[in-house]
Length: 84
Image 1: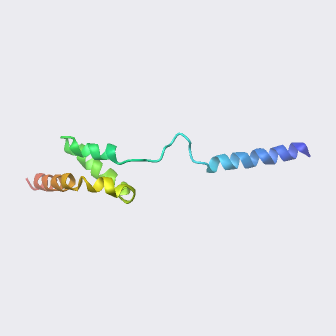
Image 2: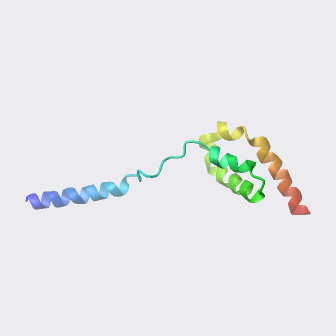
């Protein structure tokens, strides 16, 4: 009987470990790293930053909104380069 109880306990423990989030993964606490890419001179970094910011907007809008001018300026530069 005791063997069955420990077996079931081990099964439940394994199942609960699969559900728990990975303790090594931290939730993102700021958009500063992605926003820093907007200051890079290479347009590839800026394009990546704009794509990476999209899912962060709901959580970090206050922080992102301070950089709208840089995003707007880049969008005009990118448009001008595509038509040249």
